[in-house]
Structures are given as C-alpha cells and as structure tokens.
Length: 241
Image (cartoon, rainbow, N blue to C red; front, top):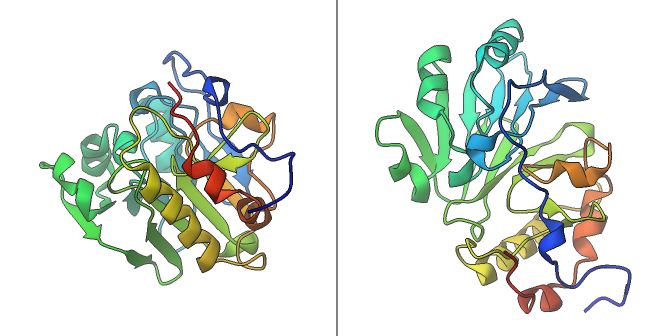
C-alpha cells in the first residue's frame, strides 16, 4: 500500500517495553503545560496514566499507582472530575480513586461489567466530555478499547494500548497473544485515519511502551505517521509474545 521501506511491516518481541517492578511511584512528569504522565504502573502491566488539568475539571486517563504521593499530587492539582478508562488493562484501583475523589468513571460499554461495584458512565461508539474532549471506541486490543481526543496543541490522541511506540518510536498496533480481535484493531486504526487530518492530529500520548520514546514525552507528527502505516502488511503481522 505504501512504499516507504523504512517503516516496519510487523513487530517483534523487542517492540514490547519491559514492565518495571513496582516501587514507590516517582513524581508525575509534565508532558505539556497542563498534561502530566505518571510512572508506569505494575498493576496495569506497566501502563502509563495521564492527567489533563482543566478549569472545568481534571481528566485522569487510566489508573496510576494509588499511593500517598500520587493522591497528594492529584489533590494539589485539583482532584479528578472524570476517570477515563481506555481499556480493561487500565482499570487498576478505580474503586479506590472514585471513593477518594468522588469522580465519574467513564468506560466503553463492553467492559463496564468488569466494574460491578463502581458507578460508571458508558458509551458505545463515541462520547463527548466537557464539550470538547471526544471518546472514540477503537476495539481490537480489547473489546472496549478506546481513545480520547483532546483538541489543544494541534490535537492529541491518548491511545491507551490501541497504538504504542515500537523500538523506533513509531506508533503501531501490537498483535499479542492477548489481543482480542486483530482485524478489528486494524479497522479501528483505519477509522482514526479517516476521522482526523494532519491539521487535527499532531500528537499521540501512548498508554505504555513510553521507554521507546527515548526521552521524548509524546509522539509527534502523529497523523503523518499513522497515514504511512501499511495496513495490508499489518493484517498479516505475526503474534508477538
């Protein structure tokens, strides 16, 4: 489909960032002026959680390690209005966070059953948060895998584990033994390419593998990189791990 031979047509086991051992969490790092990334959380298999600080209320994406430094940081930055779960692997200690911060929990409807004791708000295809953030169902990695679009900074897509950086720092879907439906994940990637443009999607904040960003805090030129992926080759890529 595309002729750029420098782009990978499949991934291998070295495209999975090693999961760090859980330890007392380090302070969150500023990604942009009002966006912070938490240390990888072993309870979510090395997942990275993000906090978007907004006047209308803060949005937390997936669960960081819930310890005293994390809760103190969240409190001093205005708490949590909405906790958005990008996929089942990002659930962590949702109930504890909801009880502590009285926040709403948002999750795609197919994975809401995993939180029977949590009050949740569900969506099917899309949902708008605070009038300008957009949740998008991108099934494949898990049944309810979803992304959150934030229109500032030229457009940021928080991708959870739908798209992760490979060893070259390029955003790609990774096919693992735990992938729910690989062909759905590729279709969801195609949906994102049809939904956005170079003018509306500048950055990606991935939900794991951030070590492969080699010191960078976001994936730049996001739309261009997605547009260059060879979907036909990806469909036939082997399972890793």
